[in-house]
Structure formats: C-alpha cells, structure tokens
Image (cartoon, rainbow, N blue to C red; front, side, top):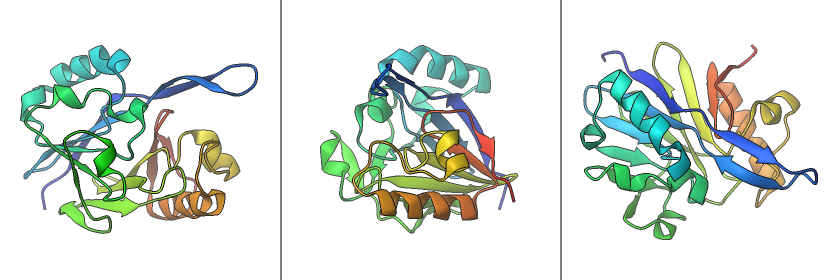
Length: 193
C-alpha cells in the first residue's frame, strides 16, 4: 500500500457569545489522497471557500479531481461547499444522507479504500461519522464527534448532542485509535499516550 497523504484544506473555528451560544461556526476540511481516490472530508461553509481553494491550489489539486466527499454529518457548517466538487460522490451515514441534496448512504465500519475507514461515532448527531486514516500516523478526522481540543482534554461531549453518553463513547473510541485528531472546529492535535 502506497503512502496516503493528508492535507488540512481549512482549519475549523467556533465562536460563542457571552452566554456560550455558538454564533459563528466553520468546520475543518481535509483532503485525503490515495492511489485510488481523492477524498475531501467535510466541505465547511461558503466563508471558508477561498481558504479551501487556496489550499487546493498550493497542493496542486483541482476541485474537479476530487472524486469523493465524505460528510461527517449533515449540519450546515460542514456541507456548505459541496457544490465545489461537481465530480464527487457525496457519502454520508445512512441515517443522515437524505438531509443533504445528492448525498449517498455509506455504511460505517467499512473501508472506503485501503487505509481509509468510515467509523460511526454518534452522539453529536445520530449519523455522525469519523474517518480513520492510516498515513504516516493514525489520523482521526472527527467532525463534531470531537469539535475541539477541550472536548478531548476534559473528556466532555460536544455541547450540542443527541446523547451525552454515546458522544463520550465516541470520543473514547477516537482517542483509542488516533495518534492525531483533526477536530471539527480546532487545529489538529496529538493524542497523549
């Protein structure tokens, strides 16, 4: 198996008001390059489109070369630039794919290609998934299963969740696998072993 390359196209962010309510959210967007596929995980928001375009240009990849988009869940701050990738199949967990135009269901627990596995990590939403990647290290592109470093550091579920216990189990699963976690709304970080 040849080396899988992983590039952060945009680093997500999250801003809250004084009451702790989120008023500005943009997800991370990640490119995975394998011999078989060019995969973008989460397309973020229209606000992040220039950053994603610049990153792709710097890497030397055209949006039309991306053949697969994997969405970690259906929230608007993760799906806002799907239209950039006209040639891509958009894949999501079967419980959420109907919420995003053009998305197709993909069963979690399967490899998309060798070294790239889709893992069901529910709690934030019913169909939240993470993408586990075997590259130079083990990466977990966690979406909002791990929205920020603080969720990992304090082992607390995302503030927005459908099930706190399930969300915590997902964080533990991700932490157990990964050397590096790429959260939904923070820079990537190393897992302490």
